[in-house]
Image (cartoon, rainbow, N blue to C red; front, side, top):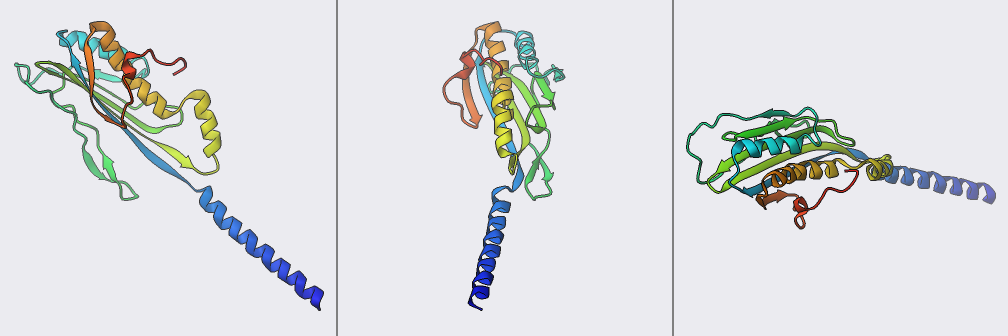
Length: 214
């Protein structure tokens, strides 16, 4: 009788342990999609013409995006503005989860625009928008990129390994934005200063050569 009770007790402990581990594992390996946004504004001090800057910017963005839609809108005003324009991020609704959903950013007043939805390893629903705004001191280059990527789950570590080998969407975004600035600077020797960034940029990487393989 005692032996039977001990056996039942161990069985109960084992069942409880398995149940607890199952609960822990389901939380530990739960996966979700994470939305990532990048925003950059660069001040480009130069006397180069708008055509020169636009051509250089097009060269820079085509280093990483093969099918970008490029445009050089006719200015709506004849005189160059004292202050540069600014890209406008529009919220047009909400996602199924209740979070705000961003619409296509507006580049009203820009003299060069680039828009694309490229396929990027590790990223989903990638959207890239760049706008060039002339002003009396030079130009402002505004750039915005958004994408979603899976986060957590059973594939978290395989994704890290894949990112180490092929690069991450974050690395691709940084290089794409910086290559536009590098191309403009190489063509015009302009003085480039970062005005605003999300996430923050450490140092002045647009002055450095891009890392190999990125």
